[in-house]
Length: 289
Image 1: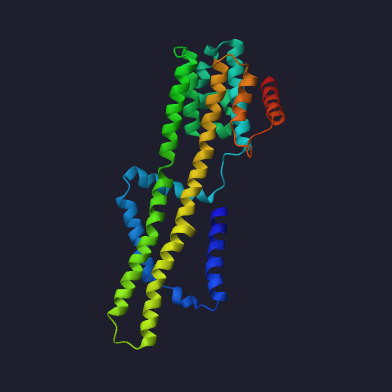
Image 2: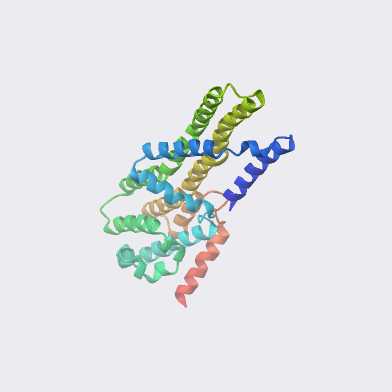
């Protein structure tokens, strides 16, 4: 909803300001120039990206209209899940969580944390490294290096839509100039018209530059920036898992390991120590009852 609200502010400010200074809004209605700029932008997007990038970008756009799912509630569930698994492994041995890790959707432990269980990417990341820890064939340094490589790969892949849209946004002002030049050419080809009509043709041509810049910096480029912010938020989930598991591998108690994970979160979503401790106690009480 913030995206739509932002677009409303952009439109109201630009066109409202133009109307207040005495401009005629009808002059700005140039559907053919919109066709030139928008069509060229879409064509350049298709040419400059492969099928995977196009599919990822189209899939990402509807998500921008929804709020971020990476909130305090999600992180509380994540850290509580990590605590329960690590506490069980510390008490009964890491082999006891092997069945939970191999079949998370059939696990009574994972079932208590639906926000995490419903995210296949997070479940895959978490269970893969828990499986490596259970097997006991890799030390903490090897697992850390592997985690870093995977997180980097996931981030690079997730940023592809942002990069694609940013390039289109950079190109739109140039396409606006193309539309304006074509309009000027059309006006000059009609030099025998009266000055008043010639002025209208030139004014219509100049609208192309305006539309290209407005579409770029008012609509497309902000979407690329928003995707980058969402990617940065989504990577915190993996970093939280990484830091928590590594702390446990280095001998920290489950509660201390969860505290390590809590510290890497952004301050706006990071639960306090008391909130995390209370949530973990509630989970333990549910298990005991």
